[in-house]
Length: 328
Image 1 (cartoon, rainbow, N blue to C red):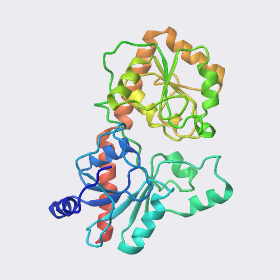
Image 2: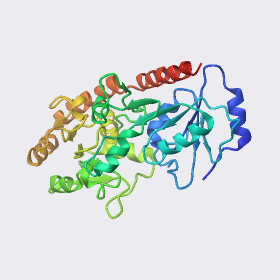
Image 3: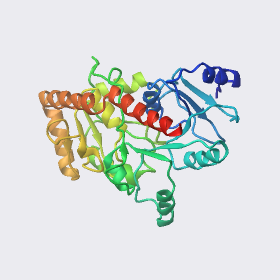
């Protein structure tokens, strides 16, 4: 575990120009934060005890991202960025009470069926000063109206792109903790669906699969497969779907949460909640190479249009500028 020294942090803070903000944050979703770092601001990741730590197998640490283990009163942060209600937002509230910094909270999740009524009540009661959701579906699910701020995820489409590799004709899936999160990722349904197909899965799931050894390895696996499948029932916008689409792969997915908002059945993917239909769409794509190419091309065009990197950067810079303006 490597931390930026106090001198490096202070130097970065002092050298910032008027347009560059100093954002106190936490290690969360590596590829999401890599994209956010492209806004050009300085990000200081506070690593408190037993917190999640950046895994470079998912993404390299950007140059403007500084891991820190201590906080000092003279650090000139502009605001706090939280991305989880399980530790981060609570600690953000504690820091806010000491430093008086506003909190921008990015909510990646939706209320799922595994929460008890008490847990759900608590989760719905704690929010930042500015709240951002990755889909309109998520905002509604948490009880926010149409005025909620929504910034969809972004995919590095210059990296996740079609490349020439030998196809292994597999049905591919990427999920972490697949078995334990059956309640939302539908592991048991996935098992039934892949029966009879040449299936492959990557992700941190003990006893089933391992994380890709590198981003290049993950990109290669997307490109090798014939079809990418997603069986989730309570996962609002799985990043792996977008990465597969960005690589020009046809996707067969459950029609749940926000997924139907960007997959149009039969054009840039296939949607169904019926397992036999799901298997039928997989077989249809395996049997028809031209259909795979046509749907995969439309899938990549969707990512370029809806989930573009520049749109993501612009949206986040607009939010950051608003927060900074409100501070004055």
